[in-house]
Amino acid sequence: MEFQLLFCCTVCFVVMVYGYKGRGDDHADHRSVPAMYIFGDSLTDNGNNNYIPAIARSNYFPYGIDFGYPSGRFCNGLTVVDYGAQMLGLPLIPPYLSLASKGTNIGLEGFNYASAAAGILDETGGNYAARVSMNAQLLMFEKTIKLQLPSKFKSQEDLAEYLSKSMYYIAMGSNDYINNYLMPNLYPSSKLLTPEGFADYLISTLSNQLVRLYNLGARKMVLVAIGPLGCIPSQLSMVNGEHGCIEHVNYLVRVFNSRLLQLSKTLTSNLPGATLVFQDVYKAVNDMVQNPNKFGLTVVNHACCGNGRYGGAVTCLPLEKPCPNRNKYVFWDAFHPTQFVNQVIANRSFRSEASVDCYPISVGQLARL
Image (cartoon, rainbow, N blue to C red):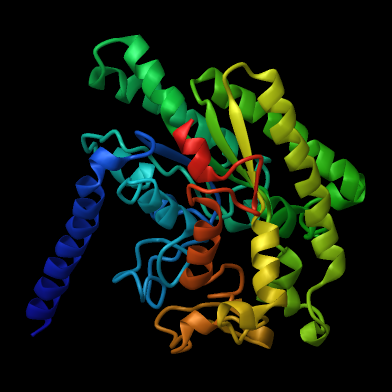
């Protein structure tokens, strides 16, 4: 009986994975970009932390309950970049370490380098043991384009053109606050720097990283704002969240986001041929938290899967029973949004027409440049 169950699950897994790939390949002729390369944290990690000795993992049920299996996504289903890839005509982008660890022959649709607990700063997230920081993710991308991609192209010029037309999605910074600046007992950053000073430090570091990405061939970049961290169940569990989001935490995020917007403008002006789009995820999520009825949501301050106050004191545990009405919740666990919210964010940003969440153009418009 156990063997039959294992066999059935294995067959279902293979069918599902190739089913997703097939849908992407069917739209190969309608791709807006040749590939998407993703840099980020647990909001975009789709399995990389499964391959390193990390504490931050989600390779167990009920994670992936609406995806079909626990892939390593920190969600009940798809993430923003999953929906975004599909809207750009691409298949689901594979986690880099899943292929690198097996020596699998790589494709040309891109890679996801994101790692849960990672940050702009190398030290961020150290309380979760192993993670792949932004600098380390850039090293993996450099390895990709220098060692793994050249054999796929007839010339270096063809590779450069491919890289210039591809999309680069950078969603970093959340952990630099919740797993660094807001942990004064573990990190000295909040004692050494004011909120403005810390944001300046993050932006300066990120700017250098983005210039490095540009020098490696990236031209179409999306800079993703940090969401309203003061509204996540993890933060609410530490205070009396009955009065709404924690304003001083959201203030820190807004200070960073305002500088990130300016950085997108500065680098677009200073880097020939580059266009950087600012995606205001803070605005999108805050809209859902403040106006849930507009989106058919009913629960804005409690995790669908979690424990303690607001389901945020202890995040979703193995085999825990999640809420049945997941499309009514903003937050899936103590830190991350539900698949429904991810879909709304993607729809508001990746569509081909103008977006109120993106500056100066939508991600879809960026793809067509």
